[in-house]
Length: 149
Image (cartoon, rainbow, N blue to C red; front, side):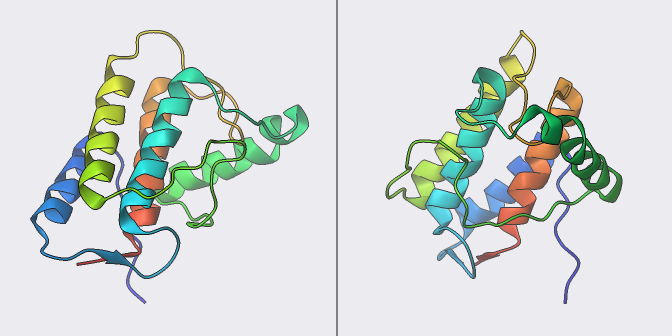
């Protein structure tokens, strides 16, 4: 099995999105359809700035969530259920690949321009902006591992 993709910044994500845009055909081997997967990643980025609709209990966010977050950061990759929506998030419906790319690029720009603190992550708890960008980039990479083009 190939090593998982490792994106640690939005620059890595944008480089990969350029390849997706250039592909003549895109599908996924697991999880969401490609456009929905991209929109899901955008939704997570937006919620990192504005807040998540449902949070794990405080005890989880302060213990297990911190351990998981630190493990992902140390490894440079993450693994999660790529077909699972964000708890409490509105359904995404059908999303084309082009629309998913546009949503993800816009969410990265909004995140970059966000000037107040990051919202607490629903599992990882409090994260600074640099760590949040890294984790969100790894989130995209975990979904990208399932893209075929």
